[in-house]
Length: 440
Ligand SMILES: Cc1cc2nc3c(=O)[nH]c(=O)nc-3n(C[C@H](O)[C@H](O)[C@H](O)COP(=O)(O)OP(=O)(O)OC[C@H]3O[C@@H](n4cnc5c(N)ncnc54)[C@H](O)[C@@H]3O)c2cc1C
Image (tube, rainbow, N blue to C red; front, side):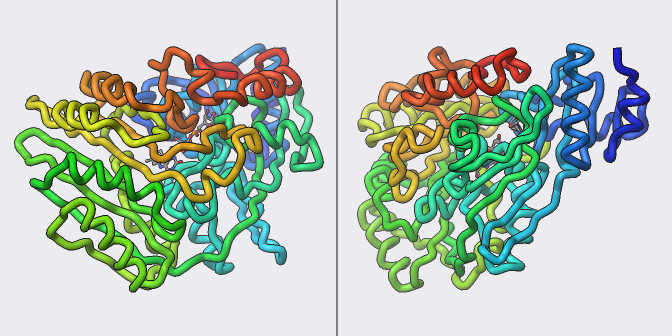
């Protein structure tokens, strides 16, 4: 049995056990629902050697190990009573002359946008500033530039990975191509521990911020118009929609998004939507914002510290039928005493769908929009609302929004890519060193 003190002394980073000062702070994931899971050890890694050492130690003592980046996983997969590998110390970001950015596995999105901005570059990626770049990329990565530049994982050109046997591999299109394929969209924690990612960055655009709040609006007309319009809008425009109900407050619709088009054509395009939806009040535009500034001005429905949320979601490859939509909106507004409920509609289409289904592990390339049902953990509305919408859904679910309640999760997350993913799992992690409910 290897000696714990010896293992601790070998680290560039730090080892935390339940009696160490600082353990309580470092052990907790961001997601409140998993705050009470107490790991036996937390290894705060500062180097690739630390990751290798921790995996070797875990193998020797036969304990479970899970990597943690931003700690946001909705299904608690970066929490364990075994060993948590905290990667936040792997936080280097550098942009080379060829505009390829090498990003440490523990970096959060806010740090990515700020560092790339200094080089006039950016990535199409998500909104939450504390979300980890690695967790986001491994499951896909949907964001406000995605309809123009694709998923975050579509910009990935290479990754360094520590495999379960402790070996370190660099994968890209020409080296370990199956592993590289699988890392682009299968979801985190499946094959090995990623220590750094290499991305082909894009020029940071100037953007127009789009926002409107409409209480007391004809919701069915609004959502119908959005479904028919937002997924087909030009790539330069991404407009998402949230419908929200709270006890004692009228149901409210919020439209938010970003445009990289000229202000005049942005206004024209939005006018098309306003006319279709029959909306009378205006949409607020703020022009001339570099993309990283625009990102920092949005707090999405999932960005609520202190609230234990439950989220279920599904993709839609066609608009919902009127009767489905009517039932969904009725259920959202049903009276109750506590809790906010949100339906979040995210526009897909554009560059997301110009990649074939089997080109990367992310299989959902013909979808028009993603619908999330978000509420407090105890609100049974989430399941009712999801079941209502599911009648018209495509049966596919975003791997970064894992849903423990799914029946056929393999088909929902991975569709036709599942057999190849299972073969990659078998080749790189034959003894299931990385395992969790719904793991490949
Ligand atoms: C507030 C908020 C906003 C969000 N906004 C968006 C958005 O705009 N767009 C979008 O697409 N998604 C969004 N998401 C979903 C997000 O993409 C996922 O929750 C993602 O898995 C979070 O990654 P993480 O590193 O923060 O979480 P973690 O819990 O640390 O990791 C998630 C999974 O990846 C694994 N993992 C982490 N690091 C590594 C590694 N180095 N190697 C191998 N596996 C690893 C973990 O073990 C776990 O299974 C949001 C989530 C939240 C909570």
